Length: 110
Image (tube, rainbow, N blue to C red; front, top):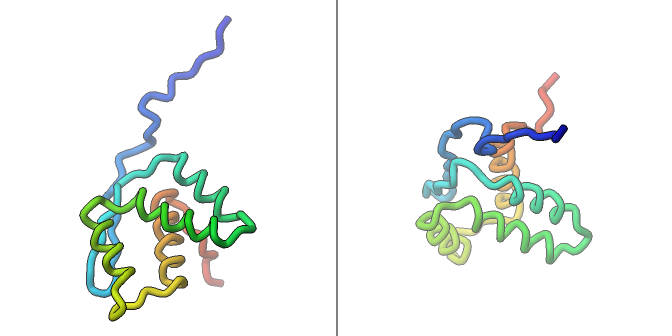
């Protein structure tokens, strides 16, 4: 007897669009993300090499942002008048991961 399971399309449910606002601009992201992208992000973010971690975060934005938003986001990050700190980028990545996984990382307040 053969063991077999059909996982269908591999998508659990229809996902709502994801967007965020930064410096009064709204950036649109893909509604869903390949699981492999998330796995790579988790694996690479635990790396000891800060250059690799920074590269992983940069690449993450390339996967999630829709093309038009990606162009505007890159322009914003190079604009000397509108500073985006590393901490803000980290907050955005954390929020996006929570949205894509449906699991907020914050503990409930007591």
